Structures are given as structure tokens and as C-alpha cells.
Image 1 (cartoon, one colour):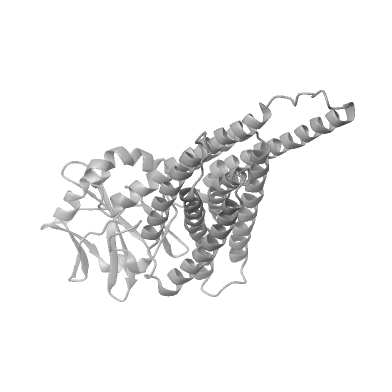
Image 2: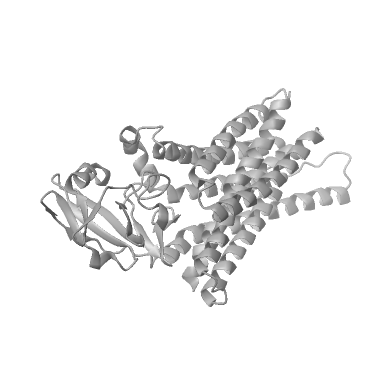
Length: 416
């Protein structure tokens, strides 16, 4: 049950932090501006992002194909990057000559950040409800919902403490923390955007895969870049000098100033405690959550007369099956097969264009990407796009599923 809890707690916590931390830091900066219009723009965009993310989740669940998760999140990331670049440029200009582009950028950044991470956040409990198939009065379902709720609450409380700690910084130090945290977010967003462009063939996989493969395979570690950026905040807060005693202060007034400074530093202590819990959850907690996510052992197959054949009796049970073929170049080419319904099979490489040759496993009768934990729609396995397995051709003849040998030979480079 602990594993089930953590499988919902960790993604809810991480998505909540990726949403709450940059928005909190940005709002602290906006509050210090004289113009009320920026604060109104922030609050308005927050509402639009919230309701739009809920609406799009409802549309995706209700229609299945009307909302492309990959394209939606790629578009939101692209707009967010542009808006963040304008915000960084405008807020850090020494002349403080703010203009209409800043207001538009605030609206765009806040709305699209909420659209991206809010969309991911709401899909977590929705996926649990769909997977339960109406059987909601079970301990497993309760632990899933509890994990999501507690993970979301932890992210909210931690983001609030980070917001309060940032609010206690002076202007110069606040801008420094703002740049560090937003730079970490921008790096993460650029990596995701490149993955989407590769998946959609806007960027050549052959050219970019060598560069992106190690980054993609280590993408789980990107959340720790954000944690390291957050750590700058309490360090900066604690390094602020002790308030000077002005001539007009009497002893009681100066003690009050010192007490306020100590109170502000307590938010920094809270942030450190939260960071310890975040890091523990995303490291040790993730190991526990994924420890039983074992990949089905691959059955070695060979080619005969130009095709690799698998008996239908082996794969007709509706579960995920993995096979491996040794190519002439020596690479072990893995592919998966699953019965989608009737006589239709989902057949694809044990790799995708976004995450590489990481592999898939079966959980709760669903096919899951081992690297990014994305749940596949069985009906889409065998079609190109997103985190789906890279499709390969096949045919059904004489009670066997046949995959052309040439198809597997040409796919060997993906498993190098």
C-alpha cells in the first residue's frame, strides 16, 4: 500500500511544486511594483489557467482524441518560454520602465504554467478513477486518492513557505533568487520542448538523439535542479546582514526590528525542512514507488524466411509481451506486443521517440513508460506520436504474428 500511495504522492508533489514555486516567486516581485494592473493581471491569469486546465482534462477524458497531450503541453511550454524571457528582461532592467509587454507576458506565463502543470496534476486522480472501473470502495483506490491529496497539499504548503521566505528578502537578493529559479525552470522547459520537436520530426532524431539521449535518460534528475535552485533562497535569506540600529530607534523599537528579522528567517528554516522532505520523497520515495515495476522478461526470437514469428496463442491473453531479436550488427532489438481487442494487436519497439529505449511495463492492466511513468492508451499503441512505442509493421498469417526481419534490422540503431 505504501508503494501505491507514493505512486500518486510523488507526481502530485512534483507537479505542484513546479507550478507553485515559480508562481510564488513571480508574485512576490509583482507585489513590489507600484502598478496595481500587474497584480490584477496575475490573479486573472491564475483563474483562467485553473479553469482552462480543468476544462481540457474533461475534454480529453470525454473525447479521448480531441486534446493531444503532447501538442498541448508543447504549445504551453513554448508560450511560457517566450513570456518568461520578456519578464526576466523587463523586471531586471535597471530603469524600471515597465510597459504593456510585461502585462501580457505575466498573463501568458501564469496561464500557460497553470495550463501545463495543472493539466498534468488533474490527470493523476482522473487516471486513478478511470483505472478503478467503478470499483471505488477498495483500499488501493483510497490510497491512490490519499496520495494525490497529501502530495498536492504538501506542494501547496511548501510553495507557500517558499513564497514567504522570498517575500522576506531585500530587492537585490530577491531578484537573484528569481533569476536562479526561473533559469532552472527554463532549462527544464527547453529540454521538454526539444523532446516534443523530435517526436514530431521537426528536429531530426538522427542528429539530435546522440545529444539528447543522455539528457532524456537522466530527466528524472531534473527536479533536483529545481530543488537546488530553491536552496539558494534560504541561503540568501540567512546571509542577509543583521538590521542596523538607526539613531531614531529606542531599545524597544530596535528589539522589535530584530524580532521581525528573526521571524523572517524562520521561513527559511521551514523551506530547508521542506526541501529535505522533497528530496527524500523524490529519491528514496521514487525507488520504493518503482521497485515492483518490473519489466516483463524479453523472450528471444529468431528470423526465418525473412520474418520473425510469434504464435498467437502466446500473446492473445491481453497482457504485455516483450520479445528481443539479435540484429546482424549485434544489437538486441526489443519489441512489444499486446492484444488491443478482437484481432487487433499493438506492436511497437520497446522504445519511444521521446524517452529512447527505456522500455515499458504493465501496471493495473495499463502499459506504462518506465522512464516518465506516462500511461499509454492501448488503442493508440501501434501509432506514432507522444510517448507511444515506435510502431513497426506486422501481419497475421497461419496463426502467427509476423514482423519483417528488415524492420527489426533497421531499428537496431535505436538500441545502440
